[in-house]
Every structure is written in C-alpha cells, then in structure tokens.
Length: 409
Image (cartoon, rainbow, N blue to C red; front, side, top):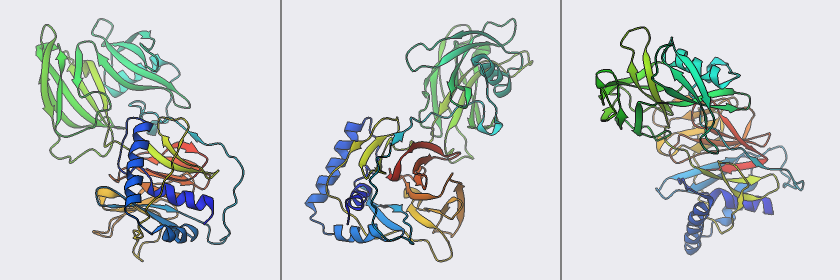
C-alpha cells in the first residue's frame, strides 16, 4: 500500500460519523475519541483495507455509533492498475455555502439589479401586496448582516415591513426574509429546524388582534398549512399557538413561515408580514477530505483551510450491494432511510431494498468518483472526475470545494 492509499483508507474510517460540532476543535476531539477506542480493540483488519483500496471500485465502510454501517466508495479506473504517483501540488478550496434565498425562485431564472427591485417584487409577487411601495434602504446593522428595504402596504399606509436582502455573485439581489415592526416572532427563529406541529410565540398588534399564519415550501407560493393566532388589537401583546399540517408527514427540506395581517379592505392580501425561513434536518457541519496532494484533512463547510487527521483506523468489510437487476456504481447506505444511493451513469439515484424501487435524485455536473451519505440519509457528498466537491440536500446540488479525490461526512 503506498502512502496515498493508506491515507485514503485512514480517512474514510476516521470520519466524524453523525455529528454536527460547533467548531473544528470539537470535531477533532470527537474523532480522537473514536480513534483511541479503535486502538483498544486490537483489530487486525487494516490488511483487508489495503486490498480493498487498490481494486477497481474500492469500497470502504465506516462504523457508526448507532450500530449501522456507513459506506464510502471510491471509484478507480479499471484500465490502469498502476499505483498513484501524484506529486504536483494542487490548490484546495472550500467555498462557504449560502443559505437558500426565499426569492426569487431558482426556477424563475430572474435576477434583480438593486435591493429595492428585489424587495418590491417579493412584496408584490410573493406576498401578494399588490399596492406595496418601498421606502428607504438601510445598511447592515452589523458585520455580515443583511441590507434591509422598507416596504409599506400602499401610498397611505405606514405599517412597515423590513425586507432583508443580500447581493450574491451571479444571483444579484435576493430576499432572505422579512420582519414587520408590529409582528415580532420569538419562536421559531430563522433557520430553526421545521417540526410539525410547529409552535409559535411572539408579540403583535393587528386588526381585531388576529394574525394569519402560513407555511410554504421553498420554491412555491402555495401554502401547505394555514392557521391563525391572536395577539394585541391596539398595542403589542403576546401571542402563542401552533400550526400543523395533518396531511404532511414532514417537509423534506426548507420551508417558509409567514405571519401576517390581512388587508381588511380586500384590495390586496397583506398589509404587513414577518417571513421566517426554516430548515429541514440539518446536514453535518464538517467533512473529511483527501486532497489531490494526498493530504487527509478535516474541513468545515463554513469555508477555510482543512486540518490534519491522524490515527489508527478500523475498516469493516461488509459493503452495501445493489441487486443484479440494478446497474450502478458507488453504492452507499443512506442511514435511517434504509436505502442505497448510487450512480447509474447519469443520475445519482436511490434504491429501496424494501420494495425494489429506484428514484432518481440529482444529475451531477460530472461523473462522480466518490460518494457518501450522512447518517440521516438526507445529505449526499461527492467528488467528481474534475475533483470538484458537491453537496446535495434536495433541490439543486451545491459546489462546496475543489481539489479533492474523495470526501466523507
């Protein structure tokens, strides 16, 4: 086993299982604990790891603390069995990923050149405030914060909604959320995980004290849940309540919560609204990657350089297998989904052993050479033949780095 192959075997088993540490030091401490435990087991399977690492379509499995086996696959070219001799120093980058924008939808293929244009379109087209007008544009309140645009219900109204906008490369100005002065939401907070029923609390003042509540999936203006809560009618008063969707088991990814005052005149939908983005199940915050230089590093999805990982490893030898009726490579277990993700030559797809069904998940930009799923099964990570690193949690894949040969959650 040459040095690069040995490191690749080490990284795939020393990965940080189903963990979402708050910082890289925490992640390294947890990995060290698992490595030390493996040493005490006095296992002798590293020789098997060497054999696995050099065959075409090598398969590496990772033990999870929940008793399940996690597999990471690394594809090799069967036409060339010679060992790797990569010596060039290739740069490695990890790109900080953005939270999805509420508006405009990606399917619209639309961009806004100014924050005012984005805020006005959001109010009129997304919220249905057809008579809305914009006011001033406020700079970010702190470093890294968003720009805010004042929106009022019409030429006469003074109920203010601040629409949060941000300028992004190639996307122009996008909308991240909104907050009405008279609808303050304490719970949930932006990017909290969506659970059903969803508890609501805060303070408000509205006509006859009533606030409408909606939940919409990202990328649609049609609510999948609706309700109401009662706050103050003449001054700010607390509200509490819940919104549920009995016919929806769980929204697979992000959703948008809207609390609003309806327009009593009937001229438009709302007079003011607070709009809160909610996340689906969280993806891991860190991953382990093998670079084109052969370095084994821990990376954080917030961007920045990786940190080295060392230690003895354990490599179980029971791979997930696709049946003969399903053609594909890089099969990897999808944790609690109990399905298998794989590459079918065009799509990254999912095979369900329970009923034999295959669902096409996403079309990668280039042929994957490694593929991994987190323990929840909702989040995929792969490296393609261009050595670009991609993350998928539903919707469009997101490029998060370059200069890799393999990666795992």
